[in-house]
Length: 587
Image (cartoon, rainbow, N blue to C red; front, side):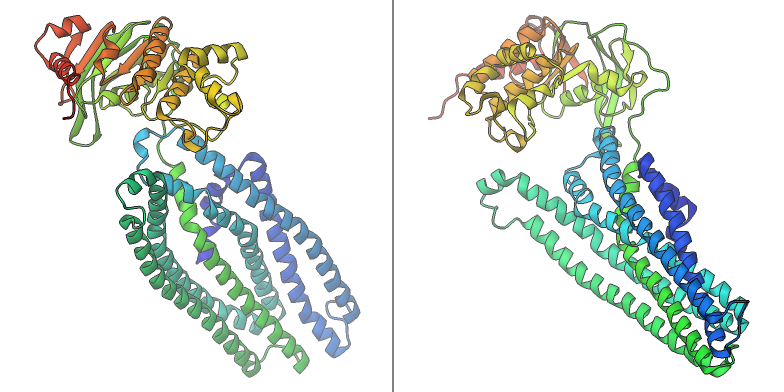
């Protein structure tokens, strides 16, 4: 039964995990008030029985006359109205808190998930998770959970009261419960089947919509912007599944509604035919009214349960995300003893089982050194940088940053040692100033100007209509690729971290922007340990150490530019090809 499943102690403990400390207090208040209000409603319904008996006989029942029973009913009604007002406030407080708290907890969880968790469809799934569906979850807490508890208490009190007043009544009401519960169970199964049909295709549609929006440039260039087949297939699948789900939902509603009506008719027949223990037709009619109210309560519980069922896939998705293993900080952290030092010792790693990317990789980069990693596409260059930043756990071996294994450091401590300049730079939909201050929010104006000048951002500022306060647009679309790269470098300079990772930062830049990047590298190498992943070998000629990977993910060569040029191997071949390509022209 839905009420048993969704209000078990384990379920309530899971819900409490989604709330803040204040939200847990609101939840406890909601539960207590729901129980009290349910009991008061049940007592009010039970009070009609002795009240009706007193009205018919004219004598006191349980030492109270009819006028006194009316006073009892009035007091119960007033008390219920006041308590239900505070219950409504508690319901909305829980709903608002659960929405706000889940957003915060999801953000915190996502920030500590291994990078391997994220897939191309993750953006669509997260967008769907934290948008309209999250509001639906809040609505279920505001309008469904509390009424279910309240109705269940009312039903229980009414059952006890009728058994005490007249066992025949209690028997008739009790006999309706299994029938309605069975109908609710079958309707719930239909609703689950409906949700199982619609939820996966709806997720797929959300993912494809995000993909369609993000790749407009490519789609338009290929003439596919008007007809994106993956999105069309996802929509068609969603429509087909939704049609089937509609029939399952309709069947559930039909089962539940028909069962409630039939049970009500059956109870009335039993009440009239068997007798109710009352001596007057008026009192019997009162009982029939109570019985109808009882079956209505059962019906409402079932309907609320079906409504709650609609929010369960989202709630399960939230629980699933919050249960994902994250990068845990060690119980005891070790302080770094070699700031800026990096070392890999016999590291092997694979993204998927039986498909290794790195094999037995070992090297050591001393502090304040300029190091480069080169190799063919797919050799594991970017993977090494990700392992240094502990985006993934290694399969074998160990990664040391600052002279300490990354697993022995708190994630915040590790990240404070690293600055990263990506090939594809993402800028927030904010001002240019705010995007650079991401590197160090507490930087002074002098430090900000210094970083901007070294990265060449000062030239960009002069061209922008609002200077520092110019919005760059979502993803930085108001700036060119080279300009976004300069902003990223300014962030790294402003952070002033002991280690700076450059991931193919010059692969697609024009000569002017590439010159700016090289100048920034020269500045950073005086203050930090540089690790540059590069395809343009001209940018790393002055590197202190160059690690060359082969297509098997192994280190094939190490040395300076001059040393590697005089060795037969991958690096020499790369250099010769790049040098020869400089003379190419279209004819």
